[in-house]
Length: 152
Image 1 (tube, rainbow, N blue to C red):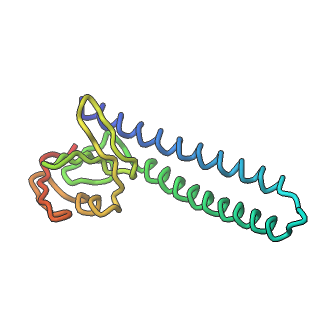
Image 2: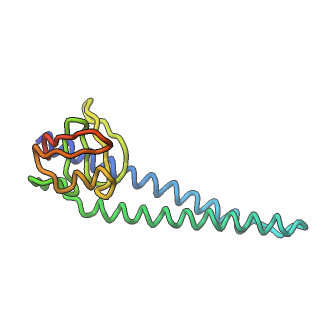
Image 3: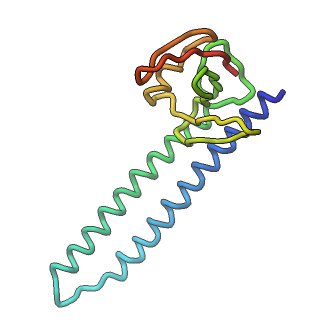
């Protein structure tokens, strides 16, 4: 039962992470849109054009970040925290001799009851190695040997 609580906590952490990123990008887009609209033509035409071009680049960058956030939401929607599998899959917690990993999105470090977990993407370098692994399997990453101790 504790294992389900850990998964639920990690899943909620990932959802909160995505929502915070979405809020930040939305604020950037909003402020850039306001700045773009208030940008008035000055006597220094080149300065005006440079400012508008920089704002446009920032808007494009924020748009790309929004696409990444949508992709993370899609991945999270595919996770069922109540599911257990003998092989590591999306939504699995993989406990190794070197660390604990939640295969989901790249959301970083999360501490649950004094135990550190890393929310990682299944397409990250270590995520690719963990995906499909089973208990007692081993792999090497960054010249270090890992042993999968448990899959939750």
